[in-house]
Length: 144
Image (cartoon, rainbow, N blue to C red; front, side, top):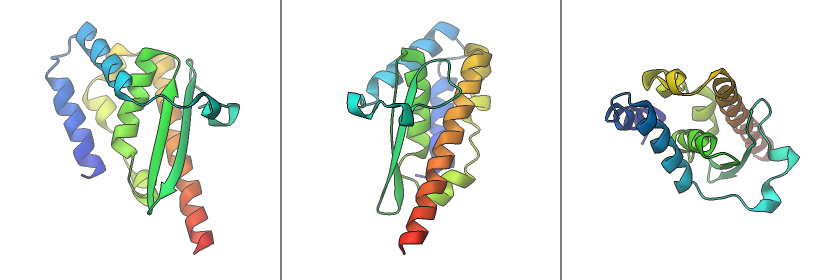
């Protein structure tokens, strides 16, 4: 499934919530609960996403030419938000991640239910995921 297809699935899921703020926030928190917890040993300063109000830990590794992300947060809503990004970008090639246009937040009206601080943090998560993809792409080209 392509990045665009995964985003379309998210847009369709959120459209069923009909813009209901409370249901949307609860759904985001449920999505976060489905994200596997990171091991405490991985929650280091090196894995913290800078620019997030909440603590967000993000790690990436390359496996068979695809990027595998792990993420966690200390708040339920933020964990749900990062889980959406993991869902969209996980198991994709570094090039596809670097070139991805993340448009589902606008399509689901995310700015209505998360504030400016969380929006800035969300942008920082996307940036960090793309930086990991770039680093892994450079590493695989160096190793070749």
